[in-house]
Amino acid sequence: MCIIHALAVDYDYCCQGLGKMLVNHIISDAKERGSEAIHLDAIDNNVAEEAFYISLGFQYTSTANLFL
Figure 1 (spheres, rainbow, N blue to C red):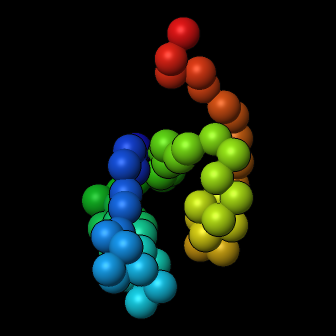
Figure 2 (figure 1 turned 60 degrees about the vertical axis):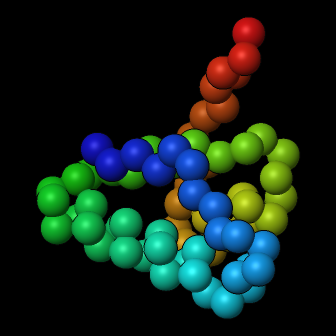
């Protein structure tokens, strides 16, 4: 399994397609390595981030509370 724990693009380079390029590269690399799934950690209630990952084919599966 591949894990994307923290992915960010500096604001100076925002909206230039770099995030999409990075995620697509991660997806391709994961497939080449035989990964059957990608675990993605994302910040809860970040609507823009959620829309971004959904546009790339990710699906919401669950929420984990990391700070008890």
